[in-house]
Image (cartoon, rainbow, N blue to C red):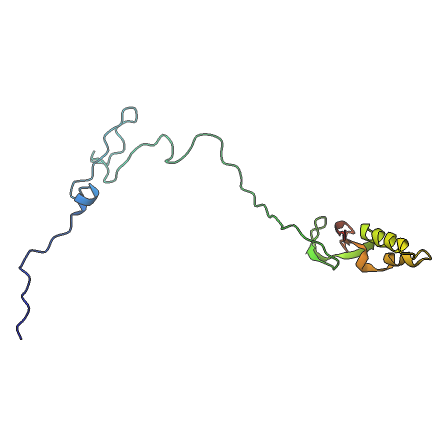
Length: 158
């Protein structure tokens, strides 16, 4: 079987030079700064030659903006709003800044009075209408800090 014909021998293309792609001629000598009017001739070495590094005077630092200094940054921690229920909640107390589990206190609220009134309408007027004031599931709940006794929040049933 015969070998497939080979492609004609064309020279391989050469990639573009650095000067062609960037526009910077790296073979040119590094330009020494010329004296700027009002700033003098700049530093020189002992033999009167310019230094081997570029020197340029700055009136301000590069990137510095005129004006007052920037304000100090202060970290602010935002706590998600806490939802209170009829059970104790673990939280950081806002008044004493301690990690606590809230102390509960049950108080008569709107739901308690609605149920009491409903029982009175149904004929339970001999004292049975006062039963809702003894049932914790019908009372509102206040959450207090056990250390500083501050009221932290209230859970209202109605």
